Length: 260
Image (cartoon, rainbow, N blue to C red; front, top):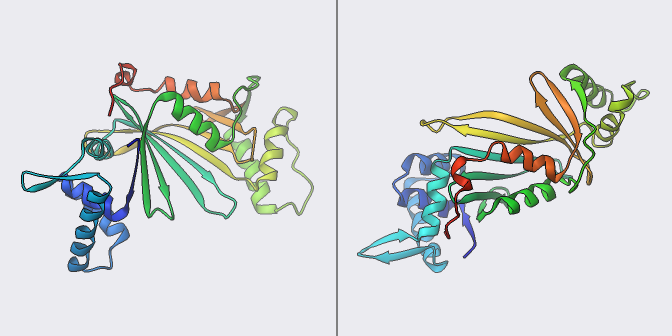
């Protein structure tokens, strides 16, 4: 049982089952704000049966309990000191995202499917996460590290020219060392993808601690690494991804992993 897929209703039931009513109610308001309490009760009864059918729920001592692996998923969603969120633009104009929550037993991969109606979870090792991010962002295994500095004003100027002028005029004049960035931004209509690092305080409030911007080509994407108010432009690579994650990895995650 490596992967766990839950419908919205099953996820809400799981939060309620663990006594996490605030999290369950938040999802209920987001997805089922219009239904009555009686209708919600029916959905939860159905979710109880479907979780039983999936072997994610057991009936012991006259009560239903989540199996240990699902308990661990819910505990991690309730609180993880750090998490990564990767977002990219799709051809249909929508965005696609995947998150990785840091735990002392590895990383919990969290994907949203079918217009966010299904949540898929899987505990992965660091190597699996890095390969997943590499495929998600279409970046190379190796990269050219002849990096270039680019100011926020230069980047904003490129994006504004591409999005506002729509190629009605001649190409914008840019520095030779930034030409590769401008060309891919022009090709992809100025779309930039993001890799965000969040940290959470004791009140579970998130703070963005770091960010990588990535171009949105189908292969060989470039990375923009934030350095104060400016950026460092590099060729995207698995090595760069690993550096980003390793520097921010939870100290506990380096411990010997346990089976979950």
